[in-house]
Image (cartoon, rainbow over all chains, first blue to last red; front, side, top):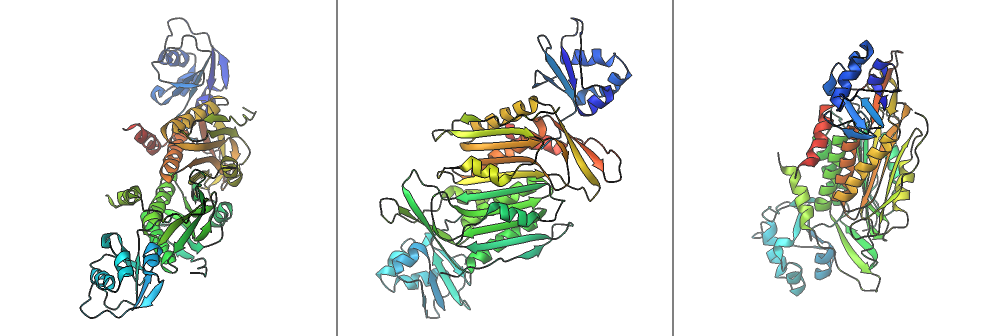
Length: 83
Length: 83
Length: 172
Length: 172
């Protein structure tokens, strides 16, 4: 699946998007945040306050307990500040 | 003092304005409505539902218990429907 | 009831910011929302929110030919100015414009305009709604309908829900 | 994140009236409020109320050089369209327009526009406020400030009172 990052999540990770291949034990958004955080210091920094991170699966907002099975694109970003 | 009339109050009375000379016993707006109503059928018709009539003294909304002493211009009209 | 009363501009204190502008007009001619907005915001880069409300004459399912708006010259401007000053006292506005037309108005034409500007949207929205609620219930204007069938129609009756809308601002 | 997503027009049912219009756009160019209002109201004489909200870039006391608005292409349009559909479901609107810009925006420039049209003002006001509250908290846009002193500034933090403003629509 494709992971995409925005705003300071993108800046901290240092990438706009990437293909990721989490193991089957990674079932929810929260699991995925934990798995990504272990990939390196940049990821750990981006996700250090996991509760503030928002996620979207295939362009729809989801909560951290949402299942990631079948997702093509998972996005991580800070709370929105548009408008 | 000058009395001015608007909308269907004006139409029923058949005048836009007139000089009036109420006696001293006419002290409030309510008194004046009563006094005017006795002037003729057109006035009686205009003020038949006195409670729905709004009044302004010198261009400021007033209630029916307001004193009319010192007023230069007293206006009578239906509830407003602007906006 | 002919003569136009022209721009009653007066300064207002935008609670610590630059003084704002308050424009109140009563006129028979149409107005241009874009011109009024541009006038109110000209030269400023501290505004975060502009709310405009335009009230239009509805055709009432095709039965309405024209609306005739009678007003109380002098009092109309004064009453709108009083309502405008209340809005400026209640919310941190950088300025506002309120324009009300009188005379013959055809379906689709504008009747009333309110523009509010503020640093934040909550104040701009609240003040615009407040202004409209009080223009409806306090500004001395009366609408008479002329029907397309030639009949003179009726004076528009005041709506209880307009009174209720105005009433809600007196809480708290 | 380059390409503009263009007018997502789709018809809506204005609860028994003529079908209304729903225009949602995400673009880098400025917009013209008057053009958007005219487009939404063209050819109709059944509209009683037009509310426009324009959100502008503030200069923050002269310290802000530009705002950089990042967005999630595709999701931005979809999320605004979802919010727009909710507004059309909740209020008897004859149409609405919602436009959000991205990219570099200078102080005084417009960022976001909402226009709502309805027979009556209450629906137009409520829907415009609802749209703005949800654009703020649900549309995937992020603001970064560039300061006049050359420093890159910070990502704008989300405001608790924006969440509270969105929360109030879930009552009742």
